[in-house]
Image (cartoon, rainbow, N blue to C red):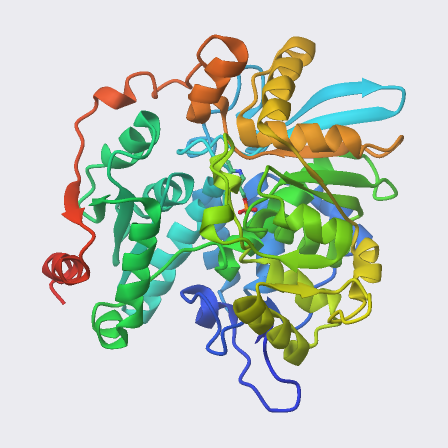
Length: 490
Ligand SMILES: *Cc1c(COP(=O)(O)O)cnc(C)c1O
């Protein structure tokens, strides 16, 4: 299995890479994103054989098609260490924790079937644990193999940072330096991150807003000499291993919802950076019988606009709304380039030109209208994509409705998914909504919708009372570099 960049020029020879080579990397050197040179295909016989597998063994079967340079026995040990009921233990009462991502049928009448797939039972109560926990184990394995070390440096406003810290805590050869805006996260999110006492985790509360944190990460990363000496890396959502780990639960969801491979299902995915739904696209390209992939956005509707018009128009930070589904407050979907590359028939030169145009002009247009950049919008439906949008009021209404009709309390992001899913259901095709977080994580809005607090899973009751370990710093680059160097000893 070889990997190519979405911006690789077809007329020049480019070095293709293996899974292990790109595991620790973000962007390809030409600024593109990595994708397999060809999508491995699954056969009906494989799907039949996989129906009864545990999540860990299913993950092994799928990952080995992409990571064929990791010895099978090692890869299986890694997936079995990652996908255990012990790690994913916040399963709702009555659901089977051994399934890791259990399905919950919400509605099943007159051929309409609406299902929730629980992806948020990991340590930080959001679906990012599904991939990040595997990444932690893969990184530790690969760094040991290379006798290397890695210092992860990032900024977070909530979900990603905590998922990364819980995945990397205690891992040999890895340190995490995570910036967050001082006193701007919810008490729950702050406690989740700052209560970690592991010596390889460094929480840095920056006197400023999230953009200041992000700017500091950019400034440090642009100092190439410092970056190399301090062995700085990232774990952002474009990392290929994160995307491929997410492919697994589309298979699990499909296999659990069907009895034969003649059946199809659709998925609705609460989307921000397009990482989650990109994994669904890859599963579909591998031959998984997915009918529709529905992207659900909140008020930040860049993706919905593209799937309705063929115009991809990114927003400036000032035009990005702060909403009650904050993990989807994204104005530029960093994984979208992977889909556009496939939509353009894998033309790296055109993909590169379009995303350079986004940098300069803020948009590209594939509508086929006079003056547009192409007419590939007409092909979008062949890839199964549809979309919809949800607002704060929709979120409140949907949280209430799902609680009243089905007795389940869902979080705000999942509510965006359910709202949009209900508009895209077709008779005879089960619709699976991916549950991207648990309600306890976004309690402020739950209280607004329900007038009561979300129940917390066991172990999280008094998380705000735990001792916290963090450093407060000014948004000052040199001071940050000194802090890193002092703690890495490099
Ligand atoms: C990250 C996140 C999303 C968006 O996922 P993408 O892969 O960025 O599209 C949705 N919901 C929650 C709760 C998240 O943490």
